[in-house]
Length: 365
Length: 255
Image (cartoon, rainbow over all chains, first blue to last red; front, side, top):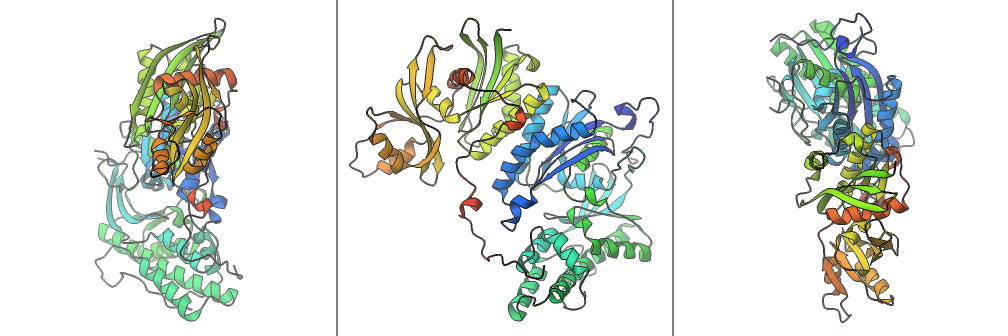
């Protein structure tokens, strides 16, 4: 089956919703961002995110109970704001509602899902549950005007976030095949935990990335896990995390900003080397011409630069979402739902905490 | 218009309840049109709540847009259950452009039990504590439902021993009802103290929910759905310092 266009480029006349793709109100609440968006196909009409970073920073990581409490307070305001920014007074003229159904924190997921179920029941609109990582796959397709949205092409997706580190072959919407994943920590989790060890604030990824830009990536030698086996597409970051801990226990905490920056740069280089090497290996094996890096860690400047260099050297197209769509957002959920609707998916919601993107419930025939 | 068509639901106890009815404000009459309650030990109310709400509306041939108000049990009770109900109410009310009215789950528990007179409604709050509030349940012809649940104390979270001490000071011994009864019984085990009247109850029932809804309507002020929130009465374990990190966080002076 050929790929399904995310964006239908028939924008004549008044531009009804069906001209550009389904008009969708999308909701995301899987972790610590409460988000709502209005999309038409891959065109983002509005995207509103209420972050809880300041709530969880005091605890050095996400507290699920607090996340749920704050989602409940934020869910209506973000929906109202998304509708207002899109110029929609109400849900008339919409084709569907979409919501992240998992994976994620179950208490957090339930806030978005129950609000979406209530909205769908009240309006009679169909409700589509979207796999969070499928949303990230579509984050690279979004555009902020009707012509900027991209059509989905077959590619290798490197899914990197606080909960996932996966290599996924994307053939078309609803056709995904995981070919590699982490055996232990997700890469974003490793960033957060190492940041905590060295006294950087939560979330750790941006803090390490910023300091890494000032440091020497060769200052310290940290392990590049699971690169020895040329056939392996799996990842492991717990050993790297332990290596940083051992370094701190034997050498003590960094005694200057330069030492701190060198440690960050060395740690980040170890992470990036592994991610890029495995992505190159997987792309070559699959014979794909595109690599998309998506998920919260795709905002990492060191990873983007290294992947761009690899793309130039190996001759593939490298794509990453705009920074505003790297972290959790509802626009990507709407984009994925729009593509699923165009592909003929039936409305359904199944809340789950850990189903993989290539679970039969996610795949389309 | 002198009538109000009201949907109410509560999911903060092991029994999830839905009630639908009409209040005739001119005549001072309340009529329950439909109701259902389900004991849900697996805590899966989220999977069927909205479908059951729609089925309840359909059984009474009431369209969603015919509703004037959505009443939501907001706890105290199970945190997730309260949030499931509140999030559902927010979505329904926003989609229908209708107001919401928060209802104390303990008031609905008090209205769900059969005894009259002084009542202490309780729910098991875990950690040896209870959510509790005192009520007087009285027949009252002037009330729309012919019954009135009069609140005598605010909702609170309290240790079983402290609640028993508070009750001992009352002139008339109340009946303790609800899922907190077994916590009270455990606290009394081996004690020489007189045992108060205990009435186990697995949560909110549909008829009691409707009764409490009538009282809440008479006393309450409706809200925009964005203002509706769950009632916890207790901070998260992280805020309470119950789960402390293995390694304390030491901020870097160079960051």
